[in-house]
Amino acid sequence: MTNWVKEQLSSKLFRRLFISTLAAAELPMVLFVLISLPTWLLANLSASSIAIRIALFLMLSAIISGIIAFFISRFITTPISEFEKSATKIARGDFSHEIKVHNDDEIGRLAKLFNYMTLELRRLDRMNLAKIIEEKRKFETIIKNIADGVIVTDPQLKISVLNETIRKWYNLEDKDYSGQDFEKFIEDAKLLQLIEEATHRKKSVLPGVEISIKPEGEWKMRVLQGRAARVLQDDGVLIGVVTILRDVTQQKEIDKMKTELVSMVAHELRSPLTSISGFSELLLDEDISREQSEEYARIILTEASRLSDLINKFLDISRIESGRIQPKKTDIDLNEIVQMVVGNNSYLASQKEIDVEIHDAENLPLIRADAGMMEQVFLNLFSNAVKYSPAHTRVDIVLKNSDQNVIIEVHDQGFGIPREAIPKIFDKFYRVTDDENVREVTGSGLGLSLVKQIVDMHGGHLEVESQVGRGSVFCVFLPRLNSKRTAVMAENSEDIIQ
Image (cartoon, rainbow, N blue to C red; front, side):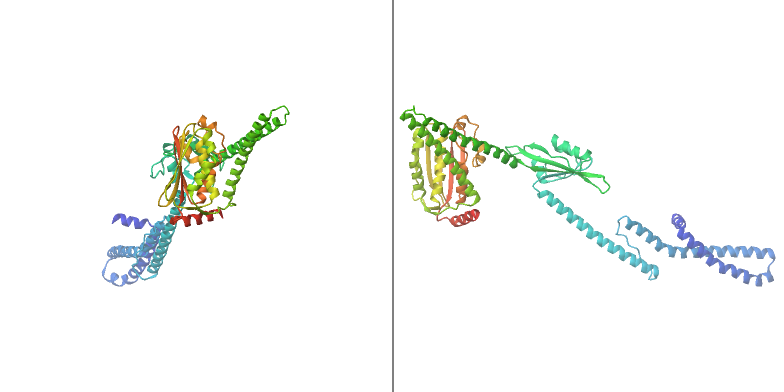
């Protein structure tokens, strides 16, 4: 009780009201004593008695007036004090406080209005909180699903945000890394240096750096292009650094392929042209014999055919990719196509004394395809099987029938293809050059790319199995004429061409 009284007396408003109320309550009593006291005191009491009684009466009236003034002041100041406390809490962001309404007077109506204002502020605060949460979820969803790697760090190099791509590339567990030291979880000197430079330098965006990593479960390196940008407040104070890592592996491979393409085309065109030019000059020599002239002419014809084959394959691939060529589909028998291709090109195998066996399938269904394109497919597969096989080996061509497809398998006992090279062998101008035997074989690197383009155009697909030193198996799957997929595949391939 004593503390509560002290608290009340410490209020400046309460003191003012108390003094005013005390004066208002004391003045009538003093006037009453001064006016009415002489009438009965002068008649019965002595002067000293009168003085004592007046003093006691004034003290009693002062006490009574003080009590009355205290409660009147408390009655007025209590709601106002509650207003002050509520306003302080609201200013600090707490909208849960309400003022108790005791009366329906001016102060009570003011309290109701104040409570209504608090209720509206609480509603607006919930709306703002819900909006902030929604925006945060949108931000997290965008960051999570973006293809680039995103890392946000604070000025102390602690992690604020990192997305799923970064977790995958750097083999991080699926947990919250907020507030953790960056270098504790990501051991990448180049990336750390980039973030440190962005944190401590004044440049808003730093030049990009190239980072090479090998994610767990992947057999090849990834090349990442890293850029970091400083994030500042309006007053220029650093909030943090946003670092973006972009996978440029494919772009690097394309650049490399372009370089190799120029080199390959130059080499492949230069070689036959040099031979043609050189042997043509020799033919002009009047001293050469007829036999030599015929030999030089055969070489020129061979090199011209090789040059023509290279140019035709390149043009065919370009036409297919650009959609300028459309397959003229008819019902064809693959047994006949395979027999014709092998028969017309059996000399390729005879030159190396390679045995060729064709295993026909009984009742092989027809397929709907472009006969000329199918000849190109099997000519490339057959010629590759012969070219990349040692002499005195064997090539088997097997035709099979399944529920959905007609399958043609080309088996050889050749040099084989390394496992890591298999996904690339259908790329234009790609050649496996790790094996010295393969490097000695002349080739453009366009044949298998053309095969894949044609098979895809007909709604089929290719599969390859190979072991280095033991040979390869190329399998072509083409939809049967009576397959439910045939019409859909054909329609889709025509849409792709158009």
